[in-house]
Length: 388
Image (cartoon, rainbow, N blue to C red; front, top):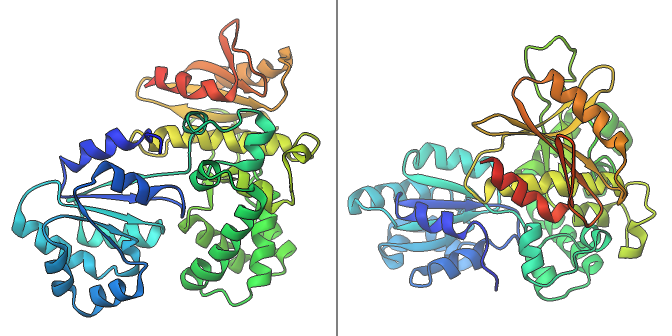
């Protein structure tokens, strides 16, 4: 097992709050992280039917057996337990009591907001970052990364990515989606998810998505919410500011894991990635998700956006810090071209507060151009660290 980047933040917050809640996609490593960080805490998994029934039918009896501190996994299965946990924590009156984990974003956040407001720190654990992937000894070749993705179990156990991601998706559809969204037409939903994968890096158009999937605009919106709630996709908001430009208002769509997106668009081996028409979109997805992981692994909020005006002038990623904005252009090609910098320079001249510019490209060498850094994906974390 490797040390996760978020581990230090997790242990620090545990000493500052009665609860720490860790959310994230299934199989992102939440349980492994928490059990490694707190080996002396009792572990209870509410995925187990007997434990779930016990917690639901007799919450006081359940907590009396758990004791004054534990890791409670998949807490979203028994949200009513949170109120009893709050009372227990208030009675004990100290920090460092319970670590809670969950795989549902919105419903869990709502339940925690009602019961544990002010008593819990919230962390989001995504699959491996590029640095964590490198530490485990996985291939650093771009096409291999885009094919195999970042889920720890696939990389740690050397599983075939296509088979493993197929099982992951089928399990997710059959179990989580049925419970989360009460979706009856699973074949249409599967088609919808694959259509989303084919639109990574594109503006969200619910009418088009719904039409192509054979469902209504309203259903498409509901299904996209289900995918967001279960940490499959996220939407990157457009940048808005008081500038004399008409800016797009629709967000862009990305997957938390580029490997899952690759599987969903039909890629069956790493060799197919190089010539696939969506390689550039998958590369962009990987880089945007890497920036998001950098934020979440340090316990920080989602502060990313993109720039696009009505004439098509665009910057793929704007990374905001307390000091200003860093403009990032993403190019999958391995050869640097002077064309990479044209739109980046124009956006930097329009957006107030841009303090730096970076191009992330598909090559292996770090380069320095006038007023701009050019880095391979693996060096992005170091660039972002220098901005904080």
